[in-house]
Image 1: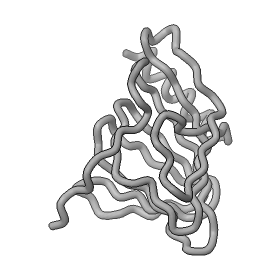
Image 2: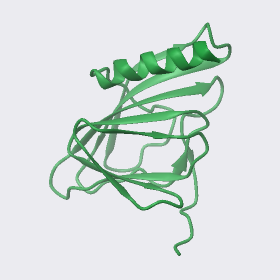
Image 3: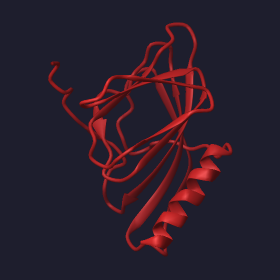
Image 4: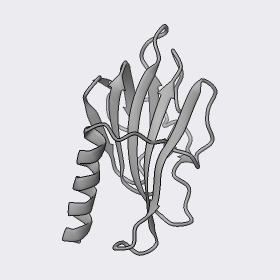
Length: 142
């Protein structure tokens, strides 16, 4: 387990230093462009694939509510991102900041701007054969 944590932290550091990639297996909502930069099966972690994904959201675009079957890290490169996580208040992330979303947590990502694109870098560790993203129903409003 320590090796997995060291590996995940190492890759996260690389992402935070500017490695770029995209979430290729999830359907792409309108107004979002994804560019796969790295997809690599992880030999020290059997049946696991790491993805580094560059994502660009058009002004006002959003991902739609979804989950990931593995850990998800997201870093804002430019623009402002609003992250909605089920059961929590929305969080606004600015350039240079990031967030971790646990596996299976229902969430939505939005471009806060109606005029400027949002550019992010996402990193996922997913069991082979599973999709990177899975659509989910929006949580009931309280």
